[in-house]
Length: 260
Image 1 (spheres, helix red, strand yellow):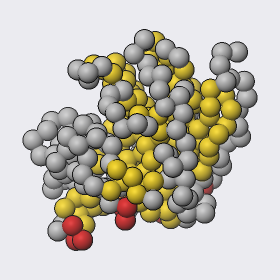
Image 2 (spheres, one colour):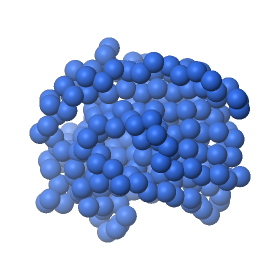
Image 3 (cartoon, one colour):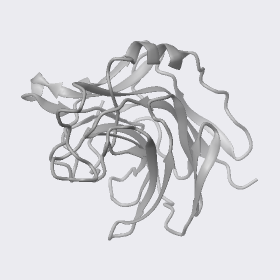
Image 4 (cartoon, one colour):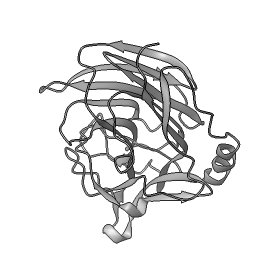
């Protein structure tokens, strides 16, 4: 199933190409964790051992606000039980940089929830990665970016977590130094008036605000080539590897039971 590309102004994605097989082996060593209890109820999980299921929609088309980006379903590939979102110059598109993205919309949209994604992102200037929650009705904002690296320097040494809200695209942002070339579990606990950003099961930032969304949202994962001339999301250049990909081993999503 193809889905319309989210109108993302901020780009994001992943990586280099050579260590793919080694990275895949490491990924398979970490199994999908058991469901938690208390305020969260497991409602969705995927470890990609059976390929890309119909639970996911694949991006197709050009993202809004980014004339340099382009998505194609052919850039979403499962190998050895790992989902790969691939960015490279695609001869089928005249040699343009083309990327991949997926949405949980066919299987899951909800208000509030807990999301965890085990992933790694390779180095690559001008190629972004983002894990985000996007309004199910297609309106924008709000938007919850819980793991974003825009490829500004290509090092993958930090992530940003950003709440977008209001007609003027107001933002509340937190940043964390983390090596995204290594495997991590990145996530967000989305509660009424509160966001808790997590890495490897530990909270690293909390946002309390009336601007936290209270509407149905979907989980999206995407890579994206930037646009030349934009400092916050630059385009790939001679320093960028010919293949840049993000690898995702598993995804889990929970419904919110209410305060305990």
